[in-house]
Image (cartoon, rainbow, N blue to C red):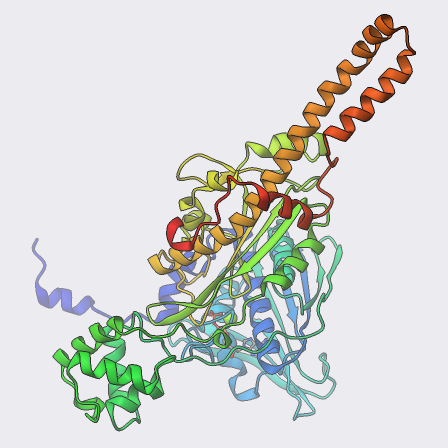
Length: 559
Ligand SMILES: Nc1ncnc2c1ncn2[C@@H]1O[C@H](COP(=O)(O)OP(=O)(O)OP(=O)(O)O)[C@@H](O)[C@H]1O
Ligand SMILES: [Mg+2]
């Protein structure tokens, strides 16, 4: 039987965003119980860190996971942030796509306004339990408490209980949230917290695992990083629709002031040049521009040389900060280095890449849970892919490694140039941890679960350049290490034959064998200067720099 257009028409219906995500919870990261439990912790902790950092408060965060029964867990996260006003509390936790970060270009962990309410949705879907929230703000005496569900038809909170509490559970200010959900406990929660503590050295996190184990991730610096500035788009890469909307919305009266007011890094000179190339009058009214003119402006904006975005729009971990943090975390590593690139732009959004390298992880648990015996370690790890640790705006990315632009960039680098083994197109292998951090006012994640960065060519290119900067330092170290190893082997050969030669010389010259042997050893030692192990990285680096085989290539040469 045929179906008519009228019959089709009866079936058309708007879909509420919450119904959509109820059916597609995997898009939000809730596709298996282990990941779901991690998502609950991560969304709440990321929010706490964002709120504290923006309010200028050193974060004190408490995380507690309780195993309520079988595969049901209660996740509690408490912070000392500014708190949330009563009027907004329910919507923050009970409405998808509601938040303070989406509409500004500002580097923060959250950006979409979907994170914490998606945990409410998942909790009620799997256990029926409401999300419980306590919020205390400084200007009010009482703590506000609510229990809520998310109404999937209206995408509004269903408040089940709310009251003002005289005696709060919180200090002067902060938020505490408790969510009960279906999950499975794995060490990934600890991995996430450990990595979070590395990328947020100013945060203190107290953690209680389901078995009661308590772990403290202490603060290693007592100052918050310099707050990043709210950004305007950069002209490079801005698209037609975005520019059209900006032109309609702007309060600027002329196209010239529109450029200088609404974009980053555009001065009057560049603005005039854009107008000239696009053949648009500098005093034209922005909203009057037609389609053809907008297209010409887009082209002109790419043609004019405009400065990179300013560094103060982003808040990188910082090379020396990252290096210190990694040395503290991996005290037995043979070599540690880190670099921070200058900001660059994709689609008009400023971003920057940082890379850290930890080489020679003796005694560390290998990524694949391999042997930890010190002797076996190096050989074992030489054939094993390096461990890649990805961060986006200081948040560790624990899933979807192979779908991520940062991974793609690591694979595209020719690691053999830096004395590392690599099958072409794969991650290099060896006892190394590679940290790659992207900071941006808008990180282009491949999905709402924010696990992998989308493959923008500009991002891949900058990541490769950052890796090459750090790779050159690694290469210097490794060639120093190889040379030291070579000399040690030669020394061992001479050492092995010294007694025999001494014996033969003693028979020939009728002198004391022990004296000859001692002299021989002194002679060998004076000819081959070796160090047992590289004692200090700077010395080995300096030695490596002498290696004539390593050319200090420019970025362009390598790319
Ligand atoms: N602990 C908290 N303290 C203060 N404000 C908070 C806290 N948690 C959430 N918020 C506010 O609630 C909003 C919504 O949080 P939610 O996690 O849903 O979205 P987001 O963090 O903006 O983006 P994302 O979906 O990427 O996480 C935030 O933008 C923030 O303004
Ligand atoms: Mg969030």
